[in-house]
Length: 244
Ligand SMILES: NC(=O)c1ccc[n+]([C@@H]2O[C@H](COP(=O)([O-])OP(=O)(O)OC[C@H]3O[C@@H](n4cnc5c(N)ncnc54)[C@H](OP(=O)(O)O)[C@@H]3O)[C@@H](O)[C@H]2O)c1
Image (cartoon, rainbow, N blue to C red; front, top):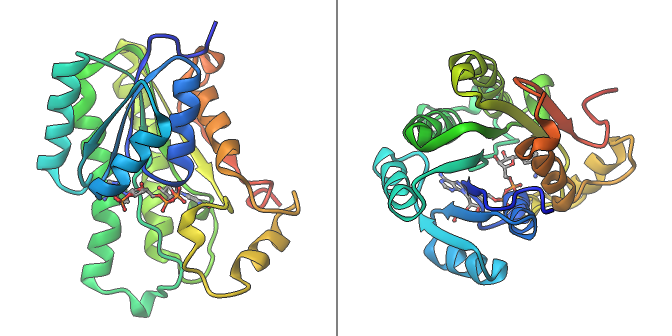
């Protein structure tokens, strides 16, 4: 039997990259996925690429009105959520403390922290007992790589959310875990300066960048009954770069 047979999964920021790969994997495993992203054209393309058992809802997780609209669509079309993957995130890698502005700080925390918080809070009434919440963190949260100050702190907040929500939601049997990728070859790497990807890959003990499908496999594990006794953890999927 498929691992997510008949489940309803909401995945934010899933028109590209590792969350799109996760959406495809979940559908292959029997789920109906509701995916989000800000740009309607990308959303339409992602829905077409997934092909079936998919619903697209355009929206910015940093805007509460958009999150409420997502909750309304899910409530009216499905009435429940069994798996929630909060992946929508903004990555900054070249802003040292002196470069950070109020605007850039708020932009990162507004999506990564506030957006994740209110996505989970507004969908909470729809979460079924025993649901699985997966927060997409980052290996950056445990490192001190230069230029990542605000981003790394924002992802560290998700690690804290997972601990507290695990106890807040234990009466409903809802599991909350963080999946922390690092060095995954996604479109987010497209704008990096020449040689940047190669320098990261050289630091990974696995000797290469990770693939979107390698994150999708880990997300499937955390979303499904395969991880039924796994709660409140931070699972690094990073080829070892954060472990050595
Ligand atoms: N790639 C890595 O090595 C890596 C490492 C650590 C953590 N991560 C985390 O993994 C997640 C996905 O990263 P990725 O590399 O797969 O990125 P990606 O390919 O750039 O995809 C990002 C997705 O999020 C959507 N998005 C961005 N901001 C949004 C917002 N405010 N509201 C709703 N959707 C939004 C984008 O669509 P629109 O732009 O149209 O909204 C797109 O679908 C992020 O949280 C990132 O921090 C990635």
